[in-house]
Image (cartoon, rainbow, N blue to C red):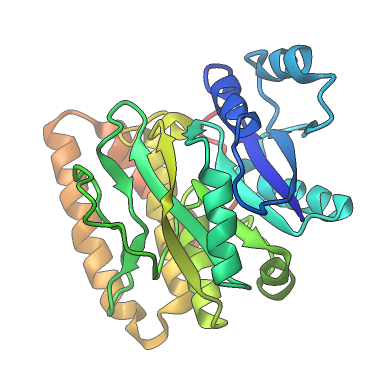
Length: 306
């Protein structure tokens, strides 16, 4: 059994080593037999992070570095890694944010869950890295009408209330175990999204094709939330959410899309009013740009930020 872990790096000097070390320290149990390889795909970082990885792990055959000539976004870089993993003969790929740290048996627990649910995508229980008893995601749910996604258990102290293994409607791209059978059928991530909502679109696509997504509470991960996008309050974040939320739902809502647009307009208007009151005009401008670019079908990387 071959498992390829895909880490996308963009100026992640302060995160990579901690993430990689927890992967290299994974424990196995029972008759668990697999070979793991880590692919670090770099989106033209400028902080010396890849040089550090090469210096520290250059002689380790379990780690391979891939350098892209520009910042092509989360989806594109993951897809490069998935293709390289396919050339290696991977049976599974684990898409994993590099600003995470895995519990020592996370991979073994994910694989055990995958064994119970063949041809399914598996997601772990995810905590905040700086509050290790507080949940960030215990799987994801989708609202029935406008299909708005949310993290189950968000900001709740973990008291075992989300310890049931179950099918879920949405899984965050922070950590996804995907078997080759699923990528063969459903394809790779949609590269138009660049950042944000690529995992929502992929979850919707899996649901449409009847491919199950399972939440595995025994597999535990710790996440430095917002590290890859400079935080939830950045213009970068506001832009991609405004644009990609529209794009994603336009693909799957059908006759319900006009109803979603009403909700979207109110939701974004309220956010913009709050930002104006707080003097954050740059977030309002970023939202307007995102909406306009979606109408113009300008996707991929926005040119407003480095």
